[in-house]
Length: 118
Image (cartoon, rainbow, N blue to C red; front, side, top):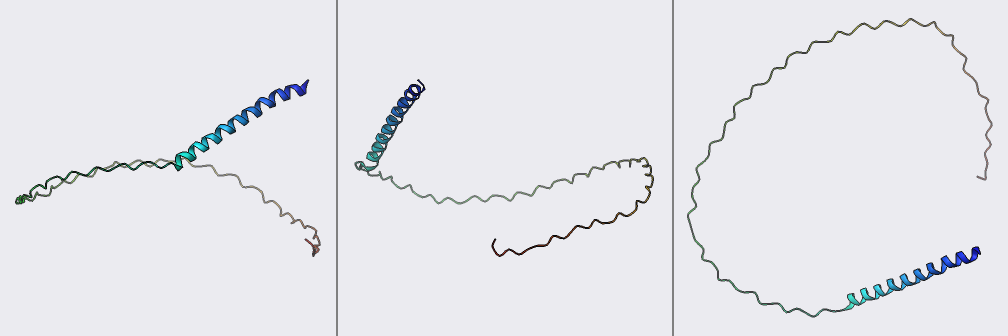
């Protein structure tokens, strides 16, 4: 019974994959044909010739020199002095008694062997 449901799912899936691969192949063939076709040459029209315009030699007008504008100096703003805040005194911490020095632990040495084969 379970074999029938797997088969009923696989057959339509295979059919769908087969059909999609066939349409993909035809698209590739159409694209190849488009690349290989040659288009006819389009004739170019002659460009019309426009008559040349006469050149006019007009004197250039002399422009008067403009004076450079003088900007007035801006006054510098005076900032008021900020009052310095008074911080409260921090109480001193009590001194701790001196702790005795602890002996440093010693670790056993592990002998190392050189192994010629890694």
